[in-house]
Image (cartoon, helix red, strand yellow):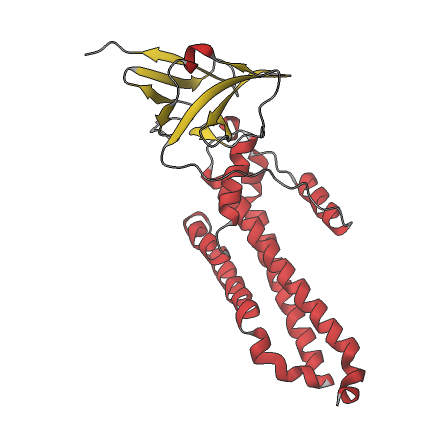
Length: 279
């Protein structure tokens, strides 16, 4: 029985390769839209730190393609939304029904050629949808420094077999966090404040409160911020209410506040303690 289909093996391999290409380009579209949604979710790029962008990006990647497209509906023109909706239906068909509905075509030369043609059309559909999304969101991406040269280099690295650097990752913030220590970390650009929570994780200030940090362990040259340490441990809302980026306060104790506000220079901020008198 197996010998009856041996001559079809090259075509079967080509079908599988075409399926892989189609699914890869659907993933490419998914990633592209996640990046675009991330940038739409952030404030002016001058306020955003690298770890904060990665934090929002990782949250976006957890969303399904359908969810991301629905979230983008109010931001894209109708014609692009229709293109993305069609791509979503094709992606869902590939993921859930393609092999079940097409498996009978795998046993004939004519059927295999039809599958190769069909899958190549799907690949082209995803590629076109991705290109249209990139063209529409290009001005937004350029605002955040993502020009075509950077994108092309990333794609070339992937094609050349160079895996991207794995992004650092932290857990999501809880509704309340217990800060046990505030550290001052020396860097080439000056001291950075790092906040340690009760579970030993490290966080930094971002535009909306505590955010992810590239630091994952305490260094020997770190110093404790003593004037804050006397009010710790403290249970705080890590994402306090704010009106503008980099303008909020953490309540450490009754009448004791850690304030954050924009600095006098672009891409800078200041922070410190504020005490209010009992009423």
